[in-house]
Image 1: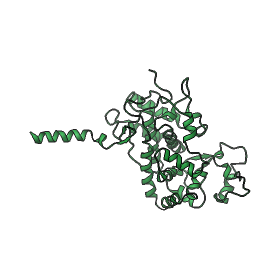
Image 2 (image 1 turned 90 degrees about the vertical axis):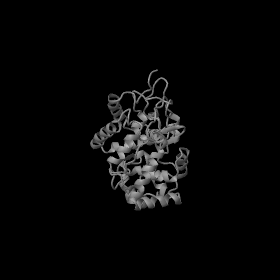
Image 3 (image 1 turned 120 degrees about the vertical axis):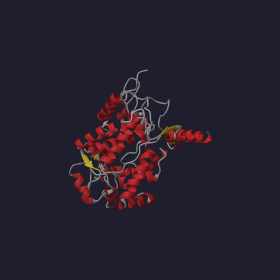
Image 4 (image 1 turned 30 degrees about the vertical axis):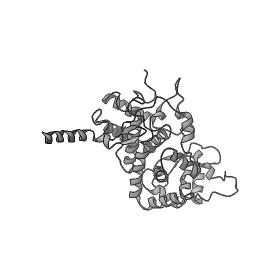
Length: 332
């Protein structure tokens, strides 16, 4: 009898294993098996839709990654970035970091629609963003990781948070590091996650000041390789062309690899926020060198830091809701 009871207790513990080994943050639990019973095809559906979109337009992979960053840095990973403006909400899409640049909303709508057909009212928009970011990384040659799941969706947005909490491309190293630390992320996370700039594009308006001596000291910005700067000026003039796009990694712009870090070693980082990683901090400089030399090390840390970032202040259990449409809160 005691042997039978022991076996039953073992089975009970095993059944609740996901909860025991989950990531706890702000009183909530996230774990990769969250939808195994309620929507077993959830991750397969997300991957399928994302794969088709990335095959059609490689840039979409970077856009989905960025969507995840910009969501998590404002009130936590709660899908607030997806909300449109309404009578009670001012959308984060209108903020300076997001206006005219953040994208992928229609694709998230497409994924949500497919999931609502498969298992209505089950998978949150916040989790969709997190899974799509992982799949985007893998589809472009980057590392994979198990995405902790169970986030619920916010019923509000924060325009001020979006304007103030997301690091800007022209921020100083200390400001960027401070904004990461406010989210519970450290300098290792900062450098590793900056490696996402190995794919995607940036607009002329985000780095123009580096090309035209707008610092006002009468000297060129020698932190940019001058032949590289000359090349950039052809499509990024002193005025106009604000929305012209440039690869963040000029060597392998559609492949997720460590060329981003190799570029920094030869002064070919596009943004000021890239360049400062190799010029303003001994620790970040050491990390840039390590990742430039060891792609496997970069991949391992990137995956670890993505899980950490994706677990910032999630809404779980009775907090938040599962939106029927990612663009608006449910009517109650």
